[in-house]
Image 1 (cartoon, rainbow, N blue to C red):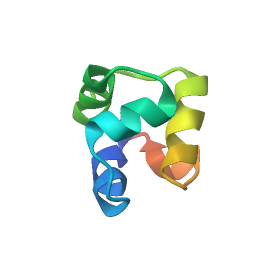
Image 2 (cartoon, helix red, strand yellow; image 1 turned 90 degrees about the vertical axis):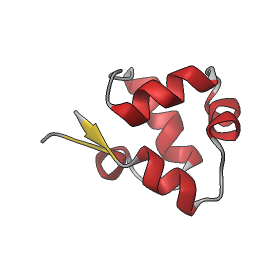
Image 3 (spheres, rainbow, N blue to C red; image 1 turned 135 degrees about the vertical axis):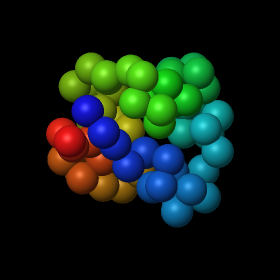
Length: 63
């Protein structure tokens, strides 16, 4: 699964740490998500989308 997390995080002016705090995970989780090394739970995907003011389907997509 691919994602637009890094692009949207930067556009939102958030650091990885700030996004991690907003969604309740460690910064390392955000790093792994951005690198495509971790597929999030539906709850985490929803929280990340909400924090980045987008929808889950715009944040994550299949290649």
